[in-house]
Length: 185
Image (cartoon, rainbow, N blue to C red; front, side, top):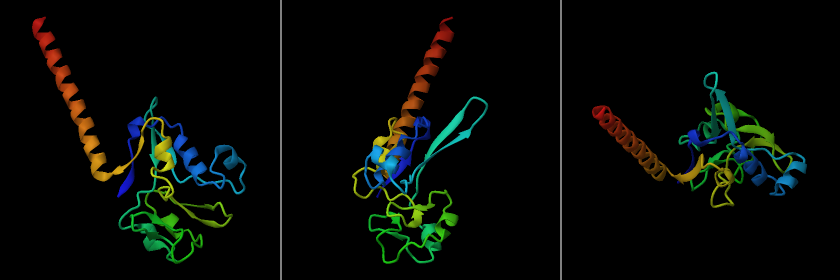
């Protein structure tokens, strides 16, 4: 199953992903229309910024992990939260309706579920649904730096190994160049 993966070193904190998610989950599906909607649409991805020293801020796009097992599913009193055949954990379109009890909000270890008004005006738990009407979720498609990726787990791991190999190769070349220069002096 394809999932959202994050490369935090590429995140600039621009929040384009939050805007794209909000617009995708709006009635109008466009930015101007979404800004005028009542109730206002709600994002399902959150960019968090944490101070990492006096001159550094760590930025991280946070998304639902669609855990397996999913604590939100286990905690859902009306059993509205369920896993689709694709492996996506959602609470819309199932056998039972969300009653906005908040149990899933309390149980999510990542804080990725919020109680808010849905586009139809009903209070419910809102979480990432991986944009089922799109081939790539809006947040990943909109990310200008490629910090959010929609890939298979093995593909993300392979890309990570390639990046690590390139870094190690560059470090080795730099070390050898430095050693050669030191010996020549």
